[in-house]
Amino acid sequence: MSIDVNNESGTEVDEQSLLDVARYALARMRIHPLSELSVIVVDADAMEQLHIQWMDLPGATDVMSFPMDELRPPSKDDEEPPQGLLGDIVLCPEVAERQGREAPTGHSMDEELQLLTVHGVLHLLGYDHEEPGEKAEMFGLQAAIIDGWRAEKGLTGPSPAPTLS
Image (tube, rainbow, N blue to C red; front, side, top):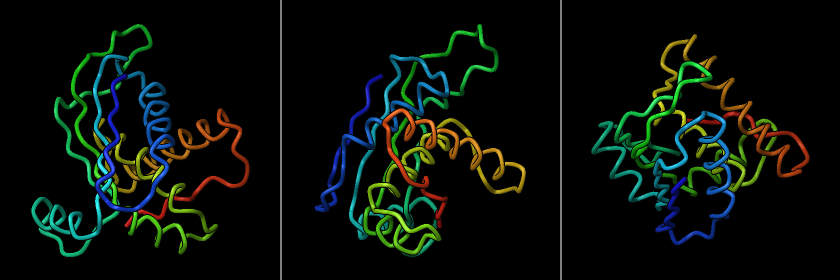
């Protein structure tokens, strides 16, 4: 799996954990091991510009996903996953820090960025949360991936609850 993490935000983030959680999520979703993903960490001004340009919405947001080859997880266990470019996930640590602090369980900026990375991966794979059924499926899968990754890493304490804006 080729995953690039590029921090352009000026904020210190745990880039290795973003790489690890993205790799875990893609493996869990059975994405071809030669597929490519880019994770870009930007400041609030850059995120706001992207949010306006692509969503026509003001203000910085937490995560944006830009799919390339529209890869999807295989539907059957014996099906060979396609290889390709997944796309880009853009994260904003300033928004993540605030959301983590305001979360019901309260968690760190890095924990929120890990959650947002998984969220972004799922968006790249075609998951959405506009409708209640879609939201239940996506957030359930997101929680299972985060919980599995945290267990594999031996991380203790409650997993971060979704705080996505």
